[in-house]
Length: 179
Image (cartoon, rainbow, N blue to C red; front, side, top):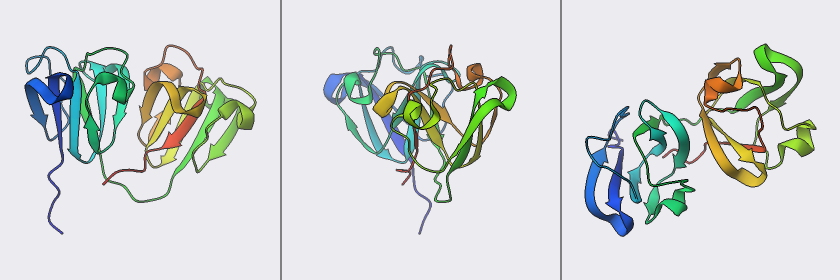
């Protein structure tokens, strides 16, 4: 198999109209290329789009497919300023979540998706996370709704390290559609 040419295309207007920008790698700053984003096509790969430059603000998981308007990617507005490619991965998934910062308090190890964290963990507060294997998305509300936070393998000692203003998490899932 040859090397996949991964690509995502951002369009200023809905239904893939207006100025557009094609991206095939991580891009920390896209506002020179388009002023707003109202539709996206993901030709291949799996991407995270960010509201602000340098991977800040709201985060949106994009799998292969077409998104004719920003509601389709659960957008809070029509602003996309940076994006990151999720590397292809077909290993195991394992993460440990902790109630308090610096891996304190009660903890729980997860190897699969969890639609309602409170049901399993008996709290909605997660203040630190150790992602041992795989790529994960935390969601603010149960059943994968609300703000999204993309986690790559590594240690996150406080919730600000994954871009959240507070520790409240309702659900989490593995990023599995990576091809």
